[in-house]
Structure formats: C-alpha cells, structure tokens
Image 1: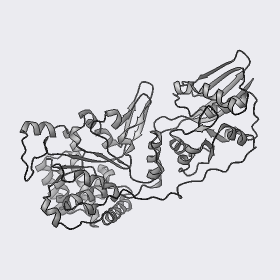
Image 2: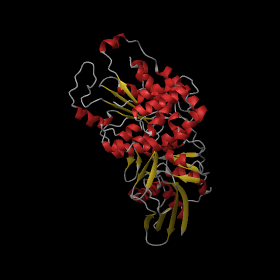
Image 3: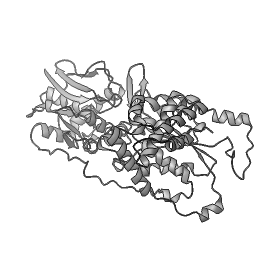
Image 4: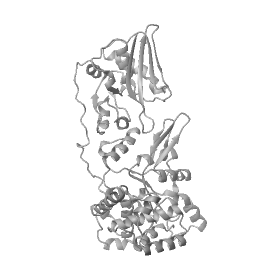
Length: 499
C-alpha cells in the first residue's frame, strides 16, 4: 500500500484555492475512483491518466486506486488535475522514487493519451493568486508563458509526463521559466487616430475629459455623425495599464481562455453586440465565467446602439457601475468578478435616427421617441457622468475642415491630468467618494453658488450632484487649476443635459 500527496489549485471566479491531491494505492480488485466533488471532466481523467502512464513506459498498477481531491466541498472542474493524479499514482505505487521534496511544487496540466501535456486555461489566474506560496509551479510549456508574467512565482515549463518524472527523480535539471514582463514589445498597430476625425471639436473635448477622469459617457447623435468612430479611438488616448492592472486583467482573459500576449498591458476595449444575452455581458454559466463587463476590467466597455440592448441587460449594469464588481450566485457556489470598467455608450436620438437632423425628416411620433429613449431608465442615466450631443457635419464642411489634433497630443494631456490626480489623492477622480470630494474638490464662492442654482434647476439627485463635481474636478485638472471655478462647474453641467 502507498499514499502520495501533491498540491494543485482550483479556480473559483478569480480566486484559486489550494487543492491537495491524495492518491492511495491498495491491494484489492483493480479499480480507479476519484472523489472530492469532481465534475465530468475530472472523472474522465481516469482514462487519460491510464493511457498517459502506459505510453510513458510504465506499467499501470492493477490495484485499487483511490484519488481524493481535498477539500471535499470545493467543486473541481477541467483537466488541470491530470498531471497531479498521474504523478500520485506513480509515486504511491512505487513506480518512481522522488529524490526531491514533492511539497516544494504545485502541479497543473491536462494529459494527452501519449503523455504530452496540453494547455490549460486559467494558468495566469492561478499564478496570480498563488504569489504568497513558496512552492514552484510545474505547468505545460504553452501555459507557462502566461503564468510567467507574474513576478515572484517560479515556473517550470514541461512538455510531457516523462519530463516531469525525470525532474522529480533528478535525472534532468530544469531552469525556471524566464519572466516575460520586461521582454514584451508593446506596439500600437490599430492605426486609429483622432486626427482622422474632422470637426467635432466639442465632442473630442468631452472625450478627453472622460478619459482624464475615467468618467462614463453617453453620446447621442444622428447615424453617421461619428459616434462609433470617436469611441473606437478612445483606447488610444488612455495610458498603458500598470503591472498590477495588467496582471489582474490578463487573469480574467486567462479564465475565459482568450488571453493573447499581444494585448499585454493594453487597455481592454470590449464591444458586445446589442443581441448579447445577460450572461454574455455580465458573466455566469453553471461554472461561472467572466462576462464582457469583467473582460473590460481596467478598460472600456462600448455599448453601441445602447437602446437596442435588452432592458434586463442594461439594468444589471447599475450595480457594477457603482461597486466595480459583479457577484454571480449559483446553487453550488457564489463567485465575484471585478468589473471596474469605463462605460462608453452611443445611441440615436429617436428610432429612425433623424430627429434634429438638418436635412432629413424625422417621422417618429412623440410616443415612439419616448419609448425609445425610455429604454434607458432614470437610475441608469443617473450613473452616467456625461451626456454629449453630437452634431451632424455637412459633407461640404468635411472638405474644408483641417486635420484635427492627433491621438498623441490628446494622450499627453490625459496622462498629465491623471498624474495630477494621483499625486493629489492617489486615485482617479471617478473613484472619489463623497467624503473625498469634500476634501479634494475645493470650490470657490462663485462655483458654490452656481452649483446650487444648477442643482435646483435641473433637479439633480445627490448622486448626480457629486458626479457633476467629479467631472468639474477633471476639467480643472486639465487646465492645471488647484480649485474648481464657476467655469468648470458650468462646463461640467452642460454634460448633464438628457436628450
């Protein structure tokens, strides 16, 4: 009889709780059972492990094999436990003798029938959550590339089961996988520049303010006025993610198996179609996975034609816009995903899109317009910092208008404004709570008087009142002012007009 204990990790949302893989080999009728709340993918590892061990040159023990994945009340999914189970069978049955302490390592990898190791999803999330552990990770080579982005974690990249056996028996030495953080060239290849957008100076100014303070913004305008064109260039004026932000964002992409090394440290830009379900946008499933709002974490979520989205999808955005996270509850588990995104939305002024157009005639009835704009509820609009009306540019004016500012010129001002915010309050303006607004957003006498007048006239809620001050603080930062003047309040107030 023999017993082996190895360390692995599960995935539960963005957390990666530790799992102990216990393998017991005893005399009795040949059997192979796995306990510890495994799902179908884990149960199927019995056949993969058996074939991989045999194809690696070992005799599979014809004995009673019991595998326990502890803790027993934590659901286990995917094939990432294959490698740990196979090694446990080899060690517990005496087929190999480990010459190094097995407790120094954690294992993750799905086995092919020939003993090769396949890519697993979530390797970066696992490494990110295990930085406090003193153990090294043994991972498939394709997954080690992701995991090596996390500083402070030793990664050993292997290609097959035999290579892991030689490592544990000291027949082969492996060097830890190099860290990729300083070896990635970050290139901007999308070719999108604000200089390509002629006119719309006022709208560009609004987008610059939104980018500087990371405020949410709703653009309203006729079809073809440039709403989508402007929104898609938003990412170009945003600074690169910090290392912590990049790892946190990449972990979410790793969970959804959509991580690409070419996107490292770039601001995420997600644009779900208006036919997307609530699960696709918010996240969920029997084994919850992050949705679009989490994949836009630390980046931009662009909702084009926002009234066409299902009402339930839009209403579910209210909570993450406030809390910056989303909680998904299922019968067997409850997970939490971060969802700190900047909302950029665009819509037409009416169903046909011609309301307010200088040439085309709108044939929508007032009732139709009311139903169309009413798809955005008052509580949701209350959580949007800025509403911008986009005018229609005439074709003859497009030929005469000069090229506007480049993305680089706008980006330099955005970075400078954000630097001022971080120096003053160690966070961006959109994150300021009410108490911090009182502390860091100093208003002069005229600004206070004007703010009260605007609040009374527009009937602003307490939430909108403080959001107006946040935007005014960003306007002041863009011109390098230490305090907020009436001009800044007035400019901020013009972005609170609804339709």
